[in-house]
Picture 1 (cartoon, rainbow, N blue to C red):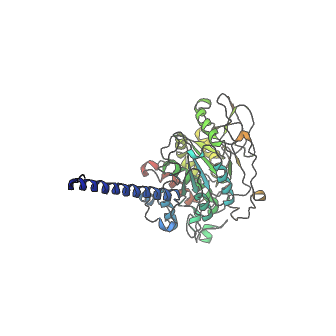
Picture 2 (picture 1 turned 60 degrees about the vertical axis):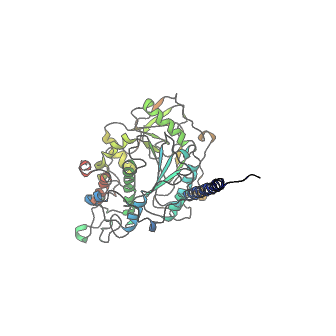
Picture 3 (picture 1 turned 90 degrees about the vertical axis):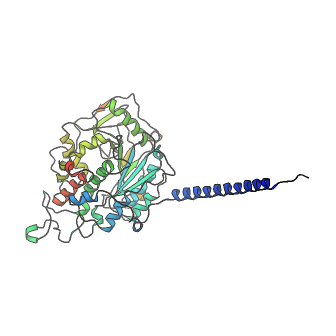
Length: 430
């Protein structure tokens, strides 16, 4: 019978001990991995009350610029803007040539559901980042966005939305002039527009939100600032076709060669009632407001026209662009698109109607968009020539505006949005 000495017994015991330790460590690491994956997969933005620890930048600069004093909700939302995108665990890598999509929304949840559903069917949507820009905070709108699982999603909230300031500017101040009141006689505060009407916070929020969003996306967010490629902008009442993203990729690739003077690429015709010409050619026409995209170079040109944008007495951002900003560029501002639309405007109600969930703004509670098989795959051909549409109808230089934007406080806030991500010395040029 063989004898086993003590050193051999100690070595065998040590090997057994080492095996147990290694197996235990592997088990712990596996558990940590599974827990981490589960937590990340189910990540939602923390409740607003739990977000105080997130810091936010540029507060010192904004204090110098004279921004309105923020409410607690405004500060919390601004901190939330710096949270990372959700769904990174599901889509860890954005495509190298991805085109970021920015969806700007207000408070029409029944519209937003339609848009989100249409986006979920877009070919290539999982390759890119969707940024949702909110004009104010509305819980139902927030829940819809937090339910998105088909791509990376980042939410941003306009911290100076009038909807967040119920008792002070940029919301309604107790001493604000109303309608056509005379400030001197009524001892109230405000500056009327060219038609004698004083500001309406719900109306001015349209232009403020768009301008804040543009400055934040291009110059403020770490995910997009310095981005040299195109960014696509859509609204909560734009139905997006399945082929939209692939078509846009083709258009942005062709634009430098087919239409080097074009400023943008559009998914839809300028005329929102048109579905396209169905020609075998590309179309160059004035830039529309449904599914429009442009790059950093064009944004810099727009940003330099901050004074023109902020002082034009017109509460609509798009009419302001058509009537004063684009004409100030000194030539035609064309956008390149395909002959068949890849996005449609379906809204029946105005921006501040339709918040109640009675579906009155949607026919029979549903949106019926005719999506054919040709709309499900990329249908733009690189060999097509470009047809230029000249002398189109619409708002042009010389139009004096519909008003609603006469208050000097709105002008100042608008200019400050253009300055908030830049040194004061640089921004003071406009």
